[in-house]
Length: 392
Image 1 (tube, rainbow, N blue to C red):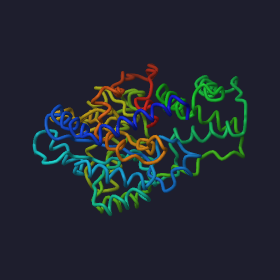
Image 2 (image 1 turned 90 degrees about the horizontal axis):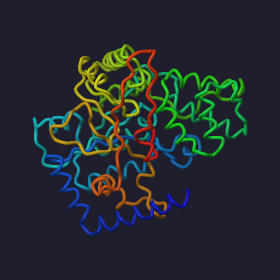
Image 3 (image 1 turned 30 degrees about the vertical axis):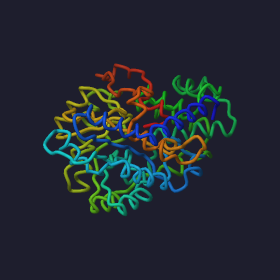
Image 4 (image 1 turned 180 degrees about the horizontal axis):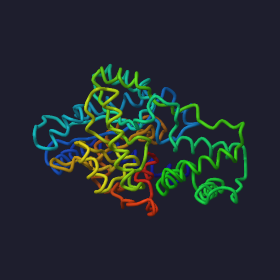
């Protein structure tokens, strides 16, 4: 970690201690409650819950990871801060004004359907009696597929580890640019991937993966061992215990990067597969990368969805648009204090969005221009959550 990061962490931890122990945190929470038009509705998002964070850190994208122990402490911290855990449907009823809540509400969500969630998050949630919803890339569930972002991390990491000098003349231009940034040390791998995925379509990501696989040769492991997805039996077991599932496209596609015929297919068929496998209606959606457009929202509404979640780290407001629900994306370092250990005061101040209320953090919005045809290139953008070190 560079010195600037150390200083920022120290300042943030010190500020959190003052806010928490002086009572200012509760005052800021009350102010946020008033600004939201009533009780607060906090939606939190996770990706992978793992047994050994530091072991997994050596081979996985850091911003997707949280240890089982830290995950449990987050849930305990939310409860101690006065939040009542609710299903997404209950939260939507409060946001629409159909029902009132006596407490601030928290909805727990997971993106991508990683098997770690079944192994390590599901038992904790079940033990604590906390509802949750997982958004599935439905065509990939029950397969050996690994996400493009995990495959890219794995392949580029191998190139780095083996000390290869990429053959830029045989790599596609996007891959050459990515490798130049990483191999030169101008960017950390996870940050470079954030930008790369934010700038290119799924087809370009696959082309880059294929080029890197070719560069590494036939004997190199093509798929990471980690990052496997749930199968449908595991999904059904969770569903039978009352856990909910929503759609996250067929193949984890950033919809604003795709022409509208692809958007329509990804939305319609992802919903149909989950409904067929579980025998229950699917009415909730999560935007890949958190990006959306009015065109994407129109497609969701036409296909019978009632809500969609973003990665915009802002407050949800009573009467707000259910297709642009705000979420706080969490990972292990969200709770790490100046000493490198878990900080309860920092965690609760982050969950209560004290730093956002004080203007110390500016969220990146998820609304993006929509690609309208195959002839229109995707619009280059920076990942909406790169500033927090979190991806996808």
